[in-house]
Image (cartoon, rainbow, N blue to C red):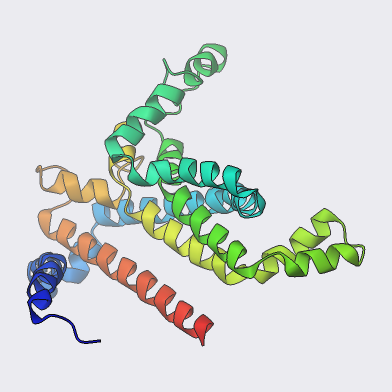
Length: 262
């Protein structure tokens, strides 16, 4: 198909808008001190906290998100549309609004948090667990939509055959449905992990920014440019690490999708 030549100009501008900031970030990396910047005490603490909380958030997405994805994929079209729209809300919600929503629900004066605090004295916000909850909140849509798409693509033909052969519902789910969409589960988990790893806004408002407790890599990067926490060189090094991690996940998923099509 022959495209109008004028179309290439805004296309190149759009591409430059996406690529140029990344080039600018890479240009700020001090390669001679990259190792020392990444492995400073503050950087390692933020890195470890990010990896642990993102892994926990991904596990939570898999445990509670997989059933939701199955329900959406096998629900009647009308209900599936409503459920899918609900799942997508955190995806388009401003991060700070998401953090405020979590505080309104789980904070000391929140809808659920207040009676829990009055009964037990436990408060979830500004703890490491709050980081996991915030990351799960923003990463869940990525996981559910990826798995639901894989389930819809696979269809329910094999499930119906298994049912006619006498397999119970749980056996069909565990031996037919989930193994059939295993690549989709892996893709959803990778997307959820990447989103959780880069989460900032909801975490900052709901979990705070305490070193070693809630200061993940994005928060360490932010505070470094306000003169707190890690140095700016370490912040740039952590930013590069996040960039590389995201690129690896995206390229890996694209490679998997290409192989799947073949």
